[in-house]
Image 1 (tube, helix red, strand yellow):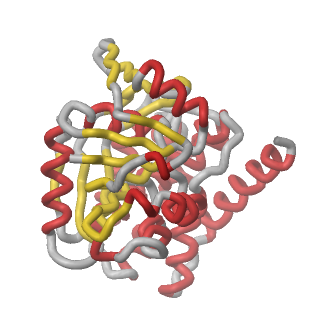
Image 2: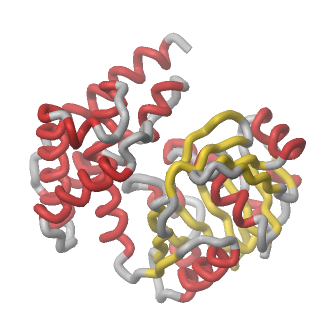
Length: 308
């Protein structure tokens, strides 16, 4: 199969690299240095067991007109750039192309649906972790299940995506209620990302420090209340525990938002804590803790983006 990638950062490299085992992989990335590194040296992945693997996609380019129509397009760019990037890559997406989002947060599908019919969209979550070590080079920091489901229609597209991902060595589960899964992962991101980014600490800090734990728990409880008011059926105590279990299990990691801070980049705060705020307004639930930390993160990024 022909599989395209929109973005080849830390997580995109993990999926793009491994999928070359069974498929022809084509990459569009806006950064020339990334494309040059991938075309020259391949995608280098440092595995958790200490091994180093190198994979060679067919081509990486900043010009999507050089790439063919693909069977599956996997998007790994931040939501702010999703619509414009998909518009730029429309030649790669035909009427039978499936578009898959495994990105954090809530709101990515809405951006994709501005360009691609909902019937062609799949979304889900990934338990894999990755750290960007440089153009075309990632450290695989955690291995887990990839969960996928369809946005509209039956499970057919999700089952097809699962088959292709499994051929690349991924453990994949298919679900009907994929939004329940996305909310579930969001709770862990809410507990970890903004707090660890602002404090410049590893994930375990929110579980081990009393004050950080208290703030994170209050934000998770707000998020669960919003999710349940939106139609989900979560047990709040179970979700609080699960979020902190993730913080401990990934304790040595520097979360994605902290990595954004490190490289002075745009964060996903608006589709993590910001999503709770936005959805809370729709269902009439106040979310003061998530709203406060959203503004703190935005203030921090405003400062360094203004001086870039």
